[in-house]
Length: 451
Image (cartoon, rainbow, N blue to C red):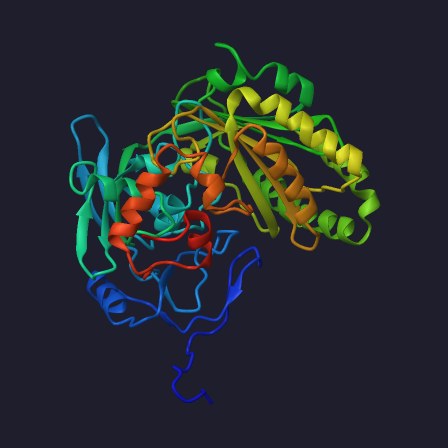
């Protein structure tokens, strides 16, 4: 029974994918269109309103003890508008999952120009937290957004883009949902394309030596990433480049059996088993990593872009990721390696490194600088705070910017020194949500007080 004068909670407990956040909202709303989304906002009373997608943020970005809004039913493809240059403006409901969006675009002969390696997120959640892929000439997902439909704290519905409500558009396309609820997203899609994937284990020194320069790995590949296995000097490199699948030089598609062995059996089933082993016998971690790094085999295949970008991830983990100046990458990795060796910390998960072009999105982690991304992970059954805290201190030395949807401990005071347009964002937030309708503890921590 509820106490007199209180509103009974009808929402069940909500937990994010990484099991780092848990809350019981006052209630959960599942609007089916923009009109019902407006009603949720205008009838919320004093309760804050937060939207949740797939819950793939490792932070408390979506958590609320107020009204939790799921946009799973707002997930249609509204329109596809071809443009003379072969691209198209595609408008979709904010709740559409990236996997469904990729399949829908393919039906129209279209694709997103870049993606991350997980497709479970909603499009609104992915852009709002700064999700990105890899590619020295490419930006994150928010750079592909050309328009948004927003529900404001006052209940108004606004279509915003670079020309209409330009500052609100800048703040909303990567802003943790703190300036308005996104009801629809318009992206600039490109003609569908195939990628040739070349995945090879390399000595870590060889990777680091070959990264930079006009013919270096970063500049000479459309998409480059690598995974370094702590406690070893080995890495898995992934180079993905556009190719005509009909070309004689194109590699054949990945066979179904080989794909299942690599991506399901080894990368998920076996990897889960080895992580469970290291959770109960941490001392075997260096040996496990040495075996895993040497067991990797090279492969080369061609497939539609989204099939190459996306990797099935079924092993649950916690993650921190920082964007740093590209020139600082080698020194930063050396510092992380020295800390692991010095402390004896056992890290069974590889460190992931990716790259992005500079962009002009106000709160993009790559704002105005070419960036390398360093992501550290820890298995869900292992403690992570000491490791992640050490990495965060190393990143601070090079003015690293934390991924908005991954674990970090920075606050508005520090973040304001890292983003040239931070105060502009906060001014837009104060103007469009002066009472904190869309606030929660995480947004208040990273953006500071309103007003």
